Length: 116
Image (cartoon, rainbow, N blue to C red; front, top):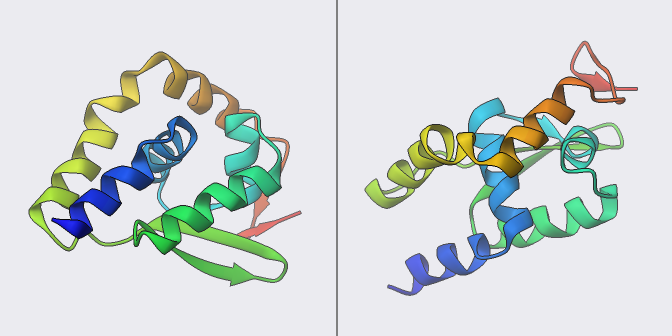
């Protein structure tokens, strides 16, 4: 039960929950894009993603100066159901809908997989 409690503890913060939902919907995404989508500074989003990484929720890949994050592959039925819920249930939440709308207007353009 400790692993499950750590998972829920990491998701208990609204910003981290919004990040999990965006990553479930979009897949691997650069920190700069996530920061724009949540209308938060990069350093704050990076800190939240660090907490999520420590909890085993996300994994990261560096590309130049940018970090790209994605949800880890579900290792249990609980994680699989949570990720499904992020995509299917929470995607309709008003805050997430605003995040997704901002995501479409992101100032950081992705070209060839790199942030400019």
